[in-house]
Image (cartoon, rainbow, N blue to C red; front, side):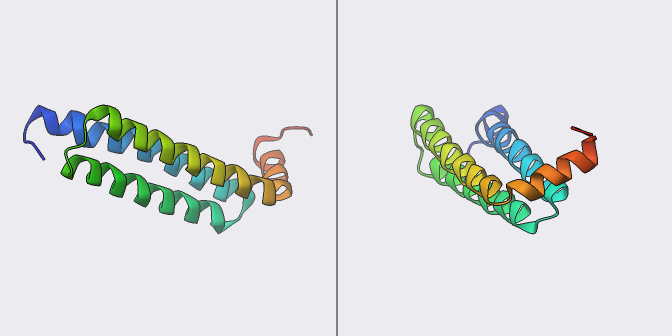
Length: 104
């Protein structure tokens, strides 16, 4: 990896920009639904995001290839979240109603 400003743009910005929404979504869903499976999904997805980003940087992939692979991982990860949300739909619904007072 390079030193200086290039490191921030190539490593820290995509790392923070990817991990923050992933972890917030997973931990919020876990808290609302009272199911640890969502937190586990977030941690596994964050690990894969970090490993793929590091692999792309170490292999010196061009930015287009690196972002395309991260976008594909995001699509697969969000599809997995949708599958979990479908399985735990009732728990999520009850949690949202209790926490946010929706539909009362």
